[in-house]
Image (tube, rainbow, N blue to C red; front, side, top):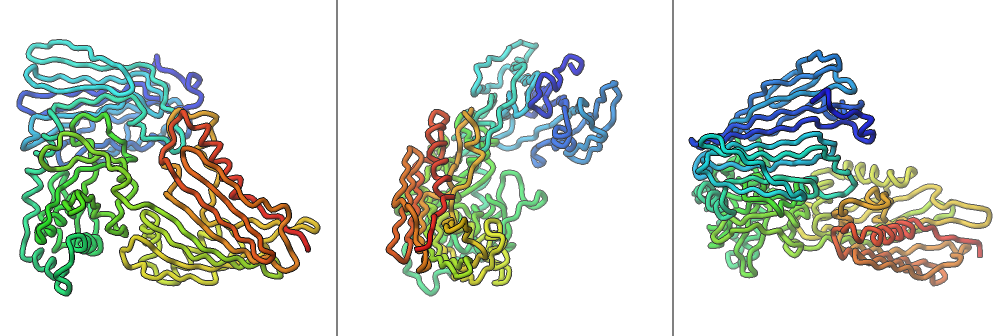
Length: 592
């Protein structure tokens, strides 16, 4: 296969290629399974060497045993150099262009309980680099039932009867690389994928997880005591306020921790242990939340979840592999409310945007399908700014900004500044401003109430910039210092795109009003009062009004769509480019 493999001349735009990706899974009547993997990768250049010099084999250490049988570099003369192996890592030494990496490993699966005897796989059939051969084979006893389906490819298995077993084999050849584009969806959403699962439906997983996790949500003396202490001063709070206080207690007092010898793969720790130790991963803090909410008569449920960037999983067959996270669904007077108790710095009303569109499975009765959290489960992310700018006699400027941020952006501000003292806060903001204004000096910074988990954060800062106004003869050029101006993006650098753009703008709404005090001896030249651009993706407007002394500038950007489909890419590209051009526009001033 190595001798017959393609060369860099065949794929001049790629740094490497997969010669063989072969996976063979044997399922035994006794319910266990063993999977053998073989992998051949040829590196073409230094970029490929850096990409594959260290290779990590992914596996679940709680439920699988890994045996690496071979890890070598095969040189062009046929000689072999052993790689250094440590646990699931292999380091390949003396790797050179046109060398081949060969890996062979086995994984033994040990499921238990209701998952005993079940298996599942999500196999990519195409990759970000070219592939010569991808093969997945499954040897399974005749009496064991399972499902399979493919995504973005119509591929039927070759089926062979071997004594008391059936052998299923899927193979593709000569697959081109998945074209990589900036802000594209996950490769598992756009690539060719094979799904295999013996789990009958999603309700089976919900029932299984309920059985192994619910016992960990029992109350204890410590839990009762903490819950009572939260309401001792205000026992008559309504349900929403009580749920909110419990959420905030967990967010503020339980530290996120996921260490293999402390946390298991699926089973949460006892709620009492999470509370006492003040440590836990996502499923641990979810168990604590459910236990604490029981104390006030509110029902809550585990929710197995995944964030949108891990893949939307909309074609996934039932399997545990669909989930990397755990949150909570709470029964409230307004219906189910979803809470992420690992979302430190987020207020009660805001789910992180990474969860929006992510797949979720409610661990409760009659839940035989995935849900995908819509945006209404979280408050909007907005930016509102009120700014003033003075042009000084030496053509430097003094700029003051009062800002309000909500949602994700409020949480981001807390994450960046909350636990820093004033000196470190000023240092961080100065570094950010210096990216745009090299000769900047921070004059003032006020950040109040950053310790409170409110939906909004308010802050004010003032800075000066030397030599900000540029001159050309009798004319002066003034660039409006927008805080949220759009910069050129790699996402729209392509003539056409193969894949959609995801999450093109971080905020739902962005508005800034700025008053610029123009010196008495200057006036704007050829001032256009309004610029407006509208598309399916959003709305943008900029208005400029000069009253003889002050120039009032108002910038507004409203996002209507989060993702950009490929058939509307050209329209979006024009819309976005117009915003960039207007945001960097300079005002021309002249002597009166």
